[in-house]
Image 1 (tube, each protein chain N blue to C red):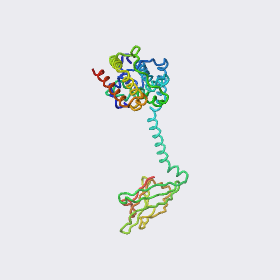
Image 2: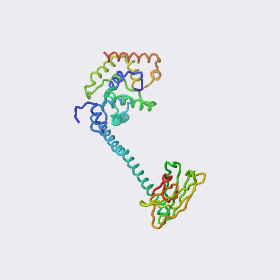
Image 3: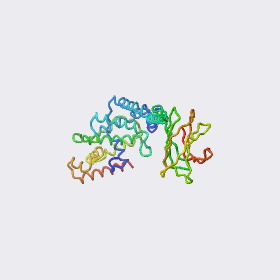
Image 4: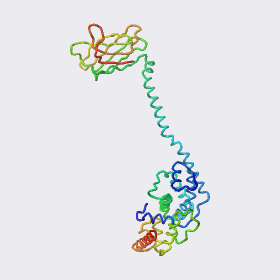
Length: 183
Length: 177
């Protein structure tokens, strides 16, 4: 109650104490019409939250689809594909970027933060097509772990995965792998 | 919906969007709401607006009604008084003071639930000296401060205070008897 000086019993009694007057005849319908109008106006709000959720979902899904399709779209536009390579436990901070031809067998690898091999060995880039792996070149890194390598794969060899490991004299890929990436 | 449902049940229906329940509440209590509004603002059109506002508020707030704090009618009349005083204050420069409560609360009552209380208040008010009733009427139904009432009536502030205090004491005694 606004006037705190009034205790509720007295105040409520005084609210009942006024002389009676009849309200206008049309007031009942006017009130009912008003609330029905509000009901109709409010009805869309009942769907507002689910609607917003659905819109958000569509937006997110749309973005995800676009994001997933982006490399393909870019590849179609430029004729090149970009694949990111991630460092493994052996080189957790290392990163690599592979740019390869969509239709051809050429590519460029750029790596960063690969640790220098203490025994003077060289890194080796391997491509794998799901059934066999081929080495397409080796490289050293500088003091920042940076290196780049231009490579050419054998004809008709379509790489699906890439990995960088330490080169070996017997021409076989060795563990551990330092960088891996997949198309 | 049962025609004999209590006000609380009707409010419960209203909170779920049942406009027929609101219609029933209006038929039960619309006259009281309108009468209180009219007593305070003294204008039919304003009282009609306030009554509409009150029932719209009931429509919107029925879900938050707390029966532990008040009866539905009590709740509606509190809303009505507050809303009416707001309107009266807004139009204060040209608003008239509420009429005295000497006139009988005529007409058939909508329900007998509050009949004994209303009879008690009626008797209590009738028994008050007119000066006390007048001061009480102004203080309660307009929200004017004691000082404003004293200025309006041209009476000393202390006199107004004691009249209101004595009127309230009498009312309390009669109501709690």
